[in-house]
Length: 524
Image 1: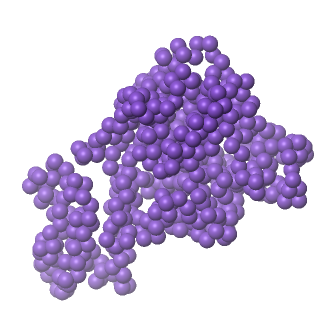
Image 2: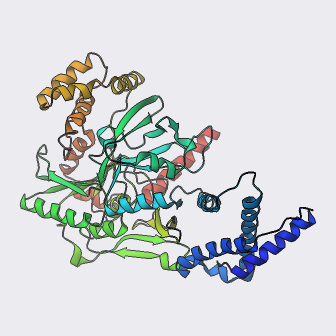
Image 3: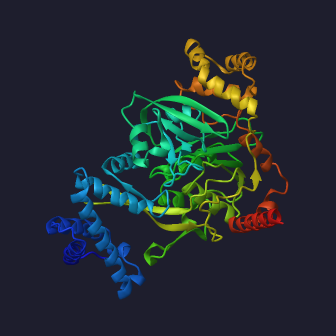
């Protein structure tokens, strides 16, 4: 693709002719149209040439089509700029054009990044920013049947969103009283982020009927990496490794954890990837390389040849003993890079997966800063597990399905009432030195008013207590998935069953066939 300033100017002449034929007899500003063409030319020039063209772009017919639509864009831009009822700043039209272009893909991960958004993205990548600590996505299309609410992919541990009990799969329906379907992703980020110590009120929709309001006090959010500990509740010597996000430092922190487990003579390992929203592909491949000594870790495929890559393991990078059994915990908040690690260990039959089906983000994005201090984020490729499965929009199915109990309608009502009554916060504030026995006693008291499971009540109280103490490495009392993993290690047929475990692609194909059979049965 290319844009010629000369042809951009020629477009205006053609458009003037069209308007004269229509009797409009308006003069056209060739200079401005040339500048507009230059802007698009700069965008294309700034991006490496490999990104701007494909093998098909050498075809003259294709080139003519590209030029034709660029001419149309030039013409509409010029017409609106000079004829709209109110004077419109050129920047507004420029941003609108790029935003619309990115939204045309119907891809929530391809975005126009204005200056503020790009700055926020840079802050996140560099490690800290003022906000509420929620990893979110937002559909580009909103309909009455399916409003484009903001969906929570995962809360960042120890963040305001995490402390408030916001969960993966929750929808933010309002921010400070403004319905989120009316907001762009940039506006959502502008409203959620801000000066630490300031408040933002969000309305949360969970499941079919639960709707409640939460006030979040912004904090300086530091992107976490890894937490680890020996699982004292396990009858074995089990190491617990919680990878929270894949950043530049995560591989080093994972190795520190493995070195610590070695000093504790560990004989089994749980890798917790629940609510891990992903991160850098370089980080996850370096970590996967510690667990397998050969073969493919992940591959990326694109219509651009230079985007096709295969990341392979090397024996020299392997630091995890092959005889130590591993179980990986995943859920609907496990996305992107966490799915790469899960898929790699599963396909190589190095670990069982347990929990719930992962999020399903199997695409790779790159951010391209533009010359106007803004930028674009574009999906450039899709990644594939070693068995050649792409899990985009489907996720990875675990070998052992372990789910948290769902709430009944009465329990949902009780939960909403408990959150809205705000009694726990005040009680914990009045009793700052609560221990586990105190938590259990207060949970029993609350149960008489709010008909909820005592374990859930203890969890909610415990989260409030941890606000001022920092999060626990794990919450074994509440975490039924973590509890459910331990018997897997005691299976006498562990090694044999792991050797015969189905690959991601096999399970994906089986699920597709089951869905097809189910749809046929419904039609019959």
